[in-house]
Length: 395
Ligand code: FEO
Image 1 (cartoon, rainbow, N blue to C red):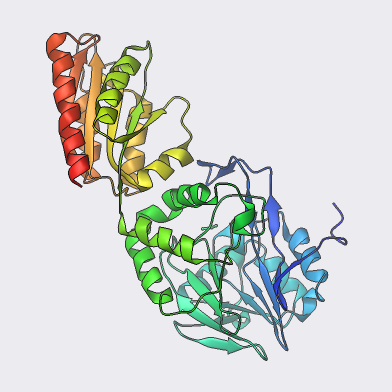
Image 2 (image 1 turned 90 degrees about the vertical axis):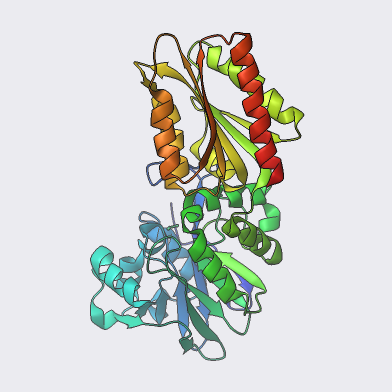
């Protein structure tokens, strides 16, 4: 691809989007599905001094530099702001620093160590900033806000004072390749929730600290480094408060595996009982479930039900993987129910209960069913569903 004709997009006067759109990428962290690809947003601010905020994933260096060149000569860049050291945003730093000989890399002290580790940036090219520090570009000032562990230790935000634009890198991001503005992306709230579940949910306490910090700022625009930009930022900020606080809905995720349909039949019975109590029930067949959708639903679900057949006396690996995911992502889920089907013996319930205990999710009940529920087992299922519904409805 020739990069000579690439464009930049001006967000406000002299502030440009110069990133890259990775439409074809389908996996992140060798784990997270990206059905709509992703973008690596990079921003250029042109004043008496020129600043580039974050860069792009390795392989997109030429695209970044081509877009910068549509605004200015890249060798004139004075500052490369590294809000986050992960390669999807910092991978092009060596290319930019080599083309812009006087540019300094601006980052936190932890970021400086990471820049050396990952990108071999020499100390004399790094300018370390602390919380509240600022750099004057000319008419404009960049202020730096430390916001650690979102989701790496070095993360910070950059605030463009005069235009009231907050550059947040991963925070407020979404894995969507298309759409410059949030209003251009169908279902952006769902994409943002999915992203929060995958990336930010394990760090809710840090997210809350960051939200408190930025609540003191007047913010006209949020420019993250994945997905679209918000020029009406209140809605996404409000959503982040809710998700970071772990405010859950009257919603239950039922994640199940079925080999011959018997588990699926039990799940239908259990699901109907919950739904009849006014619960929003979301079913995920773990054989075909998308991990990002699971993460999204864990963000605001009050409870999980894990239903598994027994495989060689144990839980099905996909059921264990889901329980582990809820633990790993530190979901705010309060309650759990385990349903195990067996033909002649099973330890599956104990395995799942162990993971849920580690995840600090209260086990409301666990039930083992000998393939097809008899009258007693069917009644026990119903009672357990009513008990779960009672807990969920009472908050
Ligand atoms: Fe988008 Fe944590 O990198």
